[in-house]
Amino acid sequence: MSTDITPNPGPVEPGEPSSSTTADTKQTDTTQAGTTQADAAQTDTKQTDAWTAPDRPAGSAAAPGGAAADDPWAVPGEAGDEASVEARKRDHKRFWQVGAAVLTTVVLGAATAVAVTLPDRTDLPGLATPNDGRYVFPELTLPPLPAGASAPADYKLKKHTADLRGLLLPLPKGAVGTGPSAAPSASPSGAASPSASASPSASASASATLPPVVGRWVPCDRDAMLAKDDKYAKFLISDACRGAAAQGWTAKDGTHAELRLFRFGSQDEASNFYSGVNLMTATKDIEASHVDIAAFGYPVAVGQVNVRDSDAKSGDRPTGRIGWLQYGDVVGLVQLTNPQGVPDQAFRQVVLLQSAMLA
Image 1: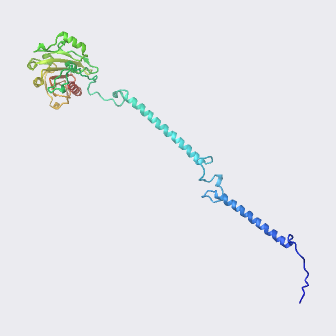
Image 2 (image 1 turned 120 degrees about the vertical axis):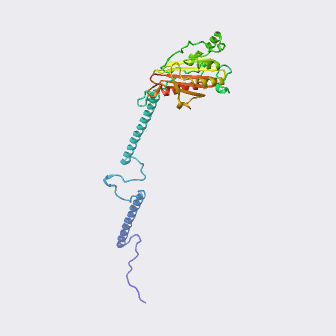
Image 3 (image 1 turned 135 degrees about the horizontal axis):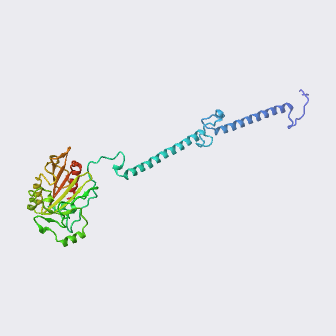
């Protein structure tokens, strides 16, 4: 048996490491501390990059010139976004320009509409039309009907019961009234039937209650027909004229108008008179006349019409024109004369309006 004679170094204290061990431990601690700090710095960088815009890499440099890069989280047009501010200024300026243009257009349009509607069309420059001879009449009104009476259109025989004088056209604007050759009477009278005249007291009381009328009563005779002799005036007797009314004027263009209305006892009597009087070729103012073939189908409101032109002309227009109208129990005469020629439009207008008054 051998014996170990190596000396025992003795027990080692646990809290006192050796010098080599202590140096290794310090180096290890320093390495670990450096690693921990690097990891912490890397973690902070990653957290900061997590809030960076997805389209910009983390840690990227700012835009050249110091301009801020686009930020999707930024409020449009906020301070610092110079392009957005300039665009917004341009939009505001454009808005006010368009608004001012629209407002100006509306104001000018309204002013133009008022300026056009207030004056007469013929007073506006560029819109005036040459006068074709037509007259300007006041508003046409019909006389009142007697109590219980109806308009002629409501009667099967087309009987007129209103005041015959009120069925004549009024004087047109600028015309001078002219009376018939015979003195007017206060009530209707017939050449063959004096009994048809109303009593003076009845006429006075009736005229006091009725509105004024434009025409005047005349006798049923040759003068009322404007006839040159008694040949055609005899129809007034045979067909028993019950009353006649007259109206006349001289227009500003020198055209002289004579209007007559004859009332008969029935539509048949009026038709007989109308058929015979159409053959009268001359009047006191027209030496000779002929039927106007082109006047067939002449525009009238009601009834029928026969038109004659004087043989004498001034240029291409006749110096006289005659129109005979018949509707129901009334026959009308329209005669226009002018040494310079009767305007066609004026004659057509008077015939049309006079026929409308008989409706």
